[in-house]
Structures are given as structure tokens and as C-alpha cells.
Length: 479
Ligand SMILES: Cc1cc2nc3c(=O)[nH]c(=O)nc-3n(C[C@H](O)[C@H](O)[C@H](O)COP(=O)(O)O)c2cc1C
Image (cartoon, rainbow, N blue to C red):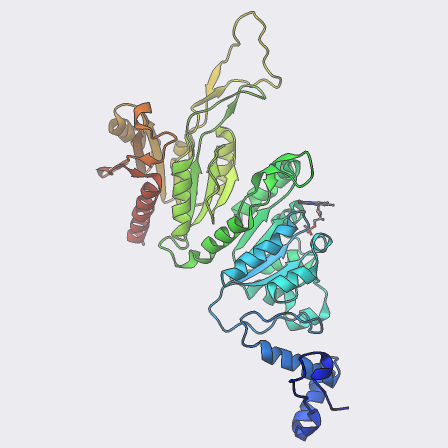
């Protein structure tokens, strides 16, 4: 029966007109019949679908309908950025609902892929309602493969965000698996991938996860978080909580603007913070570095469009947005992470690496015996700056060190530049009265092979911005 009343479908109140398909011309009716048959719908359903599509064309993000197939609506005709969000099967999946909202509030179009495990934690219905279109669930769904296909899904986006990135998804991506829609899309994309890992601290600390993380960082995958804190499972705390939705939004935003900054396309490595050298399981040798300067540099570089890997010792400052952060403890861990993160175009060594560690750290807590003090023999730590600056292969174009001095600041910095074979040294006076170590401002003397520049006292973010400007000018001049 080619008669269809909108009223009967509960579309509107008494004022809504009925529509008679019979009044349409034969050619159109034939087209409708063919289209309905092709889509496996009744003609009435086909008309309903067309009307819904037409009515929602005025919205940037059409609302999903139960009867529509899970195909992608034509890309909205706006300059909006498109994010493909992959939701993995972790407790933190509930936060991804808020993440969708936060991204869409900012005008970002969000298309979602959910793993099977993710659907145990949150429903496709909630995700679809928030995203404005059905999530994609199955690699072998003939309908969605026909409409989009995992390859288009992977490519028709500006950024892929995985939140929560489970240990399982990280392992799959690090090893090139593609046995479900999420992993196939991650392997097929030619766009930047941002992972927001979330897992139990033991899973995060597991050697296999560390290996996978190192591989992913080396492959250019960006990471946000995880943070420290209480786990959703009661009684557990530690590193492994997923970054908060707004932190993920900030990281995604930074990656989305990467293409246009002064350091677009530049790979940058930054070290930051102190190192902790264990004496026994509860004691360590450290220094007063806060990580504020190194983190500010990493943030400024990311804002300028660089792909930044920040290798950080233990600090209390937050991870900068849009930066891949690798967290380490000791000098030897830091050197290993630096080697893994190479090659890079620019390397900035702002970390205050402990010069010495104990010759042997005790497995058990050293007890007070009353028979004198323990013998803490010290050995030298590797010199990370000199090791990288002296490299023949994979030496960054620009190797920049910091010199924290308490006397003869510039003279010591000049000697350090020559001894370590680096390109620039940012020297600062860290005598206690300057308040620089741990403080918010810094006074820099930039020592290069061509001379010394004395920068005025300024905030650490201003120092970071000036340094990044200087780097951009230098790299620009080398092109
Ligand atoms: C209650 C519960 C909570 C879980 N939370 C996490 C988690 O936070 N992170 C994680 O990596 N795995 C977690 N898992 C294990 C994953 O669900 C499991 O490894 C799954 O295969 C991941 O699949 P996916 O990566 O394809 O989503 C959890 C499992 C259960 C039963």
C-alpha cells in the first residue's frame, strides 16, 4: 500500500499533515520501490528514513534512529574536526561517555568503535545517543562494511583516540594484530593515534606492558596519562587511572593543531625532573628538581606543533597536554627510555639526572644495627646528554643541555658545552637564594658555540616559549 501517514508513526501532534505516496509520479514511486528493496525495508520505512535524513540535514550531528543502519551519515558540511574514538573494555569506559560529550561541545564530530569487551561495561545505545550516530561494533558486519568499511573508518578522521586503552589493545597495536574492528582500524589508519591507557597498576607495571608502551612510543603513538590515584576496584591505588576526559580533550586538541605550528613535523625529545637512585626499597638519592622547566618546554613544543616525547623522572607537576609522557625513576631507566625514543630532530635534556647511584642497592630495607652506619659506596651514573650528543647514528640535529650551577655559571656552561659535544647549553644559577630549583621563574644564559646570550629573569613558561621560538628559527634556517 503506497500510503503513508506520518501521524500514525507518532511523529507529531494533530497539526501534522499526512503524506500520500500515491500522489507521487510513477518514476519516483519506482525509484522508491527499488531503493526500499535494496535496503531491505518496506516502502513506508524507506520514506520514513528519507524524511528523517532530510529533517536532520540541518543539524551538524544528526540524532541516531533505531531503524537506520549503522552506516556513516554523509560528513557534515562544516570545518569540524573528526575524531574516531575507540572504546576498550575497561572500567574507565564510563568516562568515555563524558569524553564524547566534551569533544562534541567543542565542535568535534565523534565517530565511535567499541570492542566486544567495551560493550560489557557501557552500552552502544548510550554511546550512540551521545555521539549522534551508532557506534561501530563488528569487523564482519556486512552492512557497515558495505557502507563504510574498516579502511574508510580508519582514514576518514583527523585523529584516532583510544580511551580507555586497555593492556590488551596496547598489546595488539604494538604487535600488529587486527582480529577485531578496533585493532583492524588502529592498524589501517594513516592518522595520528592518541592512547589514554587505563588499567590496574600491576598491569601497567608489567614488563610486557612496558615493552608494548616503549614500542608504541617508538612507533609515534601519542600517550596521555595514566594518572596516579585510587582504582575503581576498592583497596587499590597507584599509576593506572585513565586521564580525565578534559585532559584527553586537551591532548587531542594539541594533536589536532599540530599540522599548522612553527614546529609542525618536528620530532622532539625532552627529559625533565629529577631521578631517584634507590638505596634500598624505601630510600633513594634524589635532588630538588621539580620538573617545571622541562614540562613547560615540552608543552610549548607541543603547542608549536612538534611531536613531543617527554621522559620524566618522578615529579608532582601534571603531564603536559598533547605530549607522550614516559615516566621513569633512575638515571639508567631514563637513558634506556631516551634511546628508545630516538630518532628525534631535537633533544632537550632538562632533567636533573643524579650524578651518582649506590654501587649496589639493597633488596631489603637496611636496618639500624647500632654497629655504625652503612657503607654507601657510590658509582657514576651514565651521562645521558654526552651519550646522545656523541652519537654517530641517530644524533638529533640539535642537542640542548641544561647546566645547573652554583658558581662560575657561564664559565662552567662553556666547558660543559665543549666536553659534552652538545649544541646549546641553557645555564642557570641554582644557588638556594635564587629560588630557581623548584620555583616558577628562571634566569637563563644561553651558551652556544657562537657566544653567550643573557636572558632576563622570566617565568619558566616564558623561558620555554623563548627557547621554542629560538629552535624554530634555527631549524627554519637549516632548511
Ligand atoms: C571488571 C573488569 C574490569 C577490567 N578493567 C580493565 C582495565 O581497566 N584495563 C584493562 O586493560 N583491562 C581491564 N579488564 C580486562 C579487559 O576487559 C580484557 O583484557 C579484555 O579482553 C579487553 O578487551 P579489549 O581490549 O578488546 O577491549 C577488566 C576486566 C574486568 C572483568
